[in-house]
Every structure is written in structure tokens, then in C-alpha cells.
Image 1: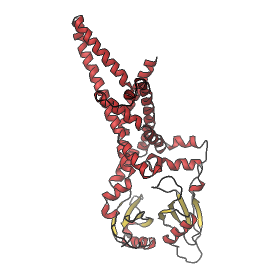
Image 2 (image 1 turned 60 degrees about the vertical axis):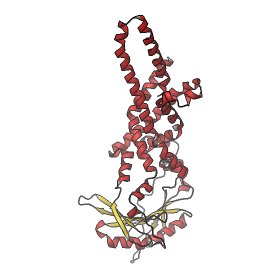
Image 3 (image 1 turned 60 degrees about the horizontal axis):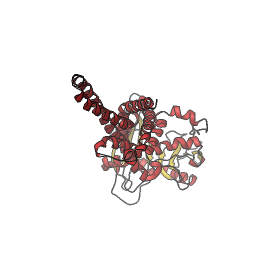
Image 4 (image 1 turned 120 degrees about the vertical axis):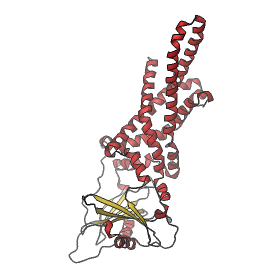
Length: 404
């Protein structure tokens, strides 16, 4: 019964590895790139996304007004992203409608010190954006996202079956369980690298389930905690007499007073008379450095706070959903965590290659055995005995390698 169960585990591990494992290998390599997506994107487009100038930064209001004046054909300035380092530039996002009525967004990049326009591109375009879509959705939109969630589930099963198959090898001592032997290089590389990287791989797969299949995870989490929805239809009070908006700089200043110590990310500008300024920040204590969850809605005329989304008031459900992406890419553990996850992202490809080679060699070995059987039957007993011994040795080797 143990042998039958082991063969079942082996088949599950094998077929999941040969199918879902290939997509997981692709997701791993693309995920490694996305761990440092901003750095890669900036260096690939350094002429418009980085600056060597230094000095006093131009104000948000000056940059947005200049952008609207220079590029009226792109629509209305919708949002401005502030530089996070001295080398970064302003990102000004325009929004317009195409001839078919579909929204079209364009990013224009400005030097924060000279107010010079450095270039523009459609939002979510370029090589890194293409890699992101491949990683998250396989270039298939919503269907691809769901498929990636299913792949994440199968990866969890594959990792568990691998551990189950490896467990009996501990009886053979440290060298068999953990060592890398020259005569079994593929097997041992597959086994050892998979075991050492099990914790981060499981974390990546587990968080990938939520990112791909949130409609399956949220009902479970909702049994224990309630999610706080973002405020809807937050508006400004339109004054009876003409009044100028407070401007993006004042909005950012007021937001900093509401959430002291927070880091400014974006300022979303009002598009209509009753719209608000929406300020995006990363608050102190948030998990992850690359993104922020703090939101402050401000009356565009009076500057009064109309609504907030405050990390310090998050429920368990809010926090759980928020940290999934930070855990998925290692950002929750700082720069060192992202560096580790960058390396881990190449492990699925290594596991797939070594596992495929093990499977292929076994398949070829069995084919040779079948070809040799007629010759063995026609030979004498002296010829059959060595062949039987060889087959037995190969069978023992196959059982030892069953953990792949």
C-alpha cells in the first residue's frame, strides 16, 4: 500500500511539474524582473525617467500647469507622481477619450529641477509593462489572471507532493537526503534546491492564489473579518462665489498634516467642479516600501478633509489583502527580501529543467528495456542473469529518484 501511495504521489508530482511547472517557470523568471520593475524601467528609459540635475524642486502646481499648457491635445492632467529620490522625475498623467469614447492615458515626464519635458508614452506601455502583463495574466486579460491563480494552487500541491516523496530519503542519511552527488547531479539539484527554497516558493504560490483568484479567498477571509471599502462619491462643496482651488501643493501639505510622517506618492487632481483632491501616501508602519495605502480626500476649495483611508485603522481583512502583493514580491521584507525573491524567481525554471531531464532519461531507459526484452528471452540463462541484475538496479534507482 505504501508503494502504491508513493507511485500516486509521484504521478501527481510528475504531471503537475511537466504542465503547470512550465508556466510557473515562466512566471518565476518574469517575477524576478518585476521585483525591481521600477529600477529596470527607469534604466531602460533613463533619458526620460532619470535626471542628473540637482537643485530646488519645482512645485507640483508649476509642473501641472506647464504640462497642461504644453500638451492640451493629450487631454486633462489627472495625476502627478512625485520623485522618490534625487534622480527620479515627475510623472504627469493625462486622461482623454479616444474617438470611440474609450479613456486614453498618457504619461509625460518632467525634470523636477528644470521643469523640462523629457518624454512621453502611453500609460502601461513599454517592455516592463509587457512583462508585467505576461506575468500576471499571460497576456490573456481576466482569463489569464484566473489561470495564473489556478497555476498557483497546483504549485502548492506540487511542492507538498515533493516534500512527501523526499521524506523517506532521510533514512538514507544526510548525503542522500540533502547532498549533491556527481553521479546523480540532476536528481540532487532538483531535490536540494526545491527543499531549500520551499518556504519562499510556498509564500509566492500562496499569495499568488489571492492575486489570481480573489473571489475565492475573500469569502474565506470575510468569515473572520470585514473589509473596509474605499469611500465612494466623495465630493467638494462648490462655493456660491467664484473661488480658486487650493492647488496640489497645498493639498499635499494638508495631507501630511492629517497623516504625519507619511511619504507622498501621488496627487490626483479634481476633474470637475465638485471633485476633490485625492492624495496617495505611504504611512509609517506600513508593510512594504514600494506602495502606499494611505488616502486623503480633500475639498478642492476649502482643503477640508472629506474622507480618509488610514492604515492604522485597517481591519484584519484590509491588512491581509493589502500585504499580499508585498509578500508576493518580497517587498514586505525590505531590500534584502526583494533581492532574495529575485534569486528565488529563477528556481522554478531550474526545477523544471532538472525534473524534465530526469523524466526524459527514465522514459528513454524504459524504452531501451522494452527493446532488450526480446533479446533477453532468446538468450541463455547466463545472458539473462546479468540483464535481470541490471534491471533490478535500475528499478532501485528509480524508487530512490521517486521524490522528483
